[in-house]
Length: 368
Ligand SMILES: Nc1ncnc2c1ncn2[C@@H]1O[C@H](COP(=O)(O)OP(=O)(O)OP(=O)(O)O)[C@@H](O)[C@H]1O
Image (cartoon, rainbow, N blue to C red; front, side):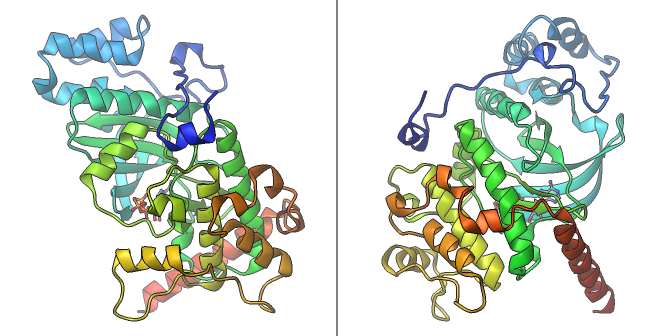
C-alpha cells in the first residue's frame, strides 16, 4: 500500500492490468465491438497471438517482426487498449480543444456508439507509448456513475486517441455562473467521483470546470484523471501550460496528495458559484508567475455571505485552506452539511438547468 506522499512523488500504486479474457461478462465487450477480419500479415499475427499474451508483449512481438518503430501504420493496430482502432471511428464534430489536444464527437461504426475522442500529439518513443497504453488500462476498472466511462485508447504514429463516453452537455466551464441549488447537487456527484478514485489510490490532479462534464439527463461526471504517470510526464514535456487550479503545495513543487485535489475542488466550486476565478490579478498583470504569487501569498477569498448558504461558504473555505493539513479530510466530506443538504438525488434539477442553458446558448448562437 502506498502512502499519500508516495503517490505525490509519482509512485503510483501498481497498476492492475485486466486482460480482456479475465473481465467479468458485463464489463467485457459491453458495446458489442467486433474484431475485424485481418487484412495483412501483421493483422493475422495480432489475431492469432492476442488470446495468448498480454497486449504489451504482443506489441513487442509484432514490432520485432516488423523491424521496430519504423514499421509505420501497423503500430496503430498494436498499441491499443480496448478494441477500438481509428478505422472504426467516424469523426463527427470538434467539441473543443485544450492545452493538450483536441476532443471530437465520434461514432464507433461497428457498435453505433457515440463517443468523445481526445487526440493528443505526443512525440514519444514506442516503449513510452506502450507504457502509457498499459497504464491507462486501470481506467477499465473505474466503474462509477460520477466518472466518465473509458472505452479504449490507441496510438497512431505520434498521436494518442483516448475514447470515452460522450456527454451531451459538455464541460461546466462554458456555463458561467451556476445557482447554488444546482451546483450543490452537482457537487455531490463531483465528490462521489473523487472519493471513488481516491479509494483506488488515484488522484485526479487536474480538477477544474473544464474537466467536469454534464448531460441533459442530469448526469455529472469527472474526466481526465491523471492515471498514467508517463502520460502526465510526456504531456508536461511537450506542452507548456499554467494550471491555475493547482494547490499552493503543487505551485511550490512540494509533495502533494489528496488534499491537493480538495484545493482544486474548492477553487472550481468558487468559480462556478460566482462566475469568476477566486484569485484576481489587477488588470495588465496576467502573467502566470504573478497569479501563483497571489495564490501563495494572499489569503484565500471566501464566498460572499448573504448570497450563498453558510454551509456552502464553509465547505469552500475548508477546501481552500492554504495549508493542506487544514483542509477538509476526505472522510469528512460526505458528512459535511453542504453535501448532506444536496444529497437528495434530485438529478432532474440538474437536467432542467443544463437543458435550459444549452437552449439559451443555442439561441444566442443563432441570433448573433
Ligand atoms: N467526454 C466528453 N464529452 C463531451 N465533451 C467533452 C468530453 N471531453 C471533453 N469535452 C469537451 O472538449 C473540451 C476540450 O477538452 P480538453 O480535455 O481537451 O481540454 P480542457 O480540459 O478544456 O483543457 P486542458 O486539456 O488544457 O486541460 C472540454 O472543455 C469539453 O467541453
